[in-house]
Amino acid sequence: MGGFLLLIANLYSCRPDNRQSGAKLVYFDLKEFFRADSARLTRLNPAVNKTVTHNGVTETKIVHIGNWNQELNLFIQSDINRPAWKNSYAVSTSDSAIIYKARTPELKTRRIIIKKAGDKVAWILIYNHTKNLLYETNEKLSYFPDSLYLIQKTQHVKLMGRNDYKVQGTLPKR
Image 1 (cartoon, helix red, strand yellow):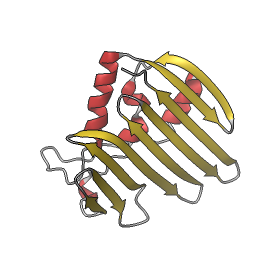
Image 2 (tube, rainbow, N blue to C red):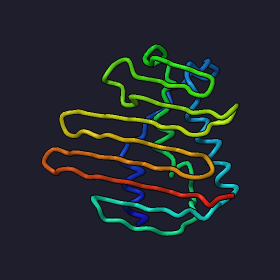
Image 3 (cartoon, rainbow, N blue to C red):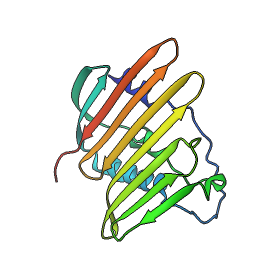
Image 4 (cartoon, rainbow, N blue to C red):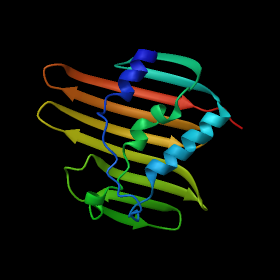
């Protein structure tokens, strides 16, 4: 399962951090939220009930995640705070939610929904889509602090076909 999980983590090429140091962030700081939560989870070191499914083949194990930054990398890479994107997302807010929606179809991160309970994040949903001449990828990333993370990914690669991935990590109840 470890090699398969590494494959999932590496499905994205590394992108440089294009933030300007000291620049004011326009949108919710998704990258910092997940880095802070990764540090929190590393300190807690919970036993995670992790289920990985690839094209209908499922494996479940109880594991301790050694690198939460890597485990949550797809969430971190969905951060939309880049100087070039400062006007690229429509923002809708209420007392308990923030919704970011891409204004143009070229942007990978299509929508982010952040549900809050007071000052805390109750859950985050992220929808990503990438399409080019070689492949098309759809992702739905769900994160519920203290209980669950879920990565659902469908990728269609020309000449190779379709792959469906699902990674679900359930944290123990406190």
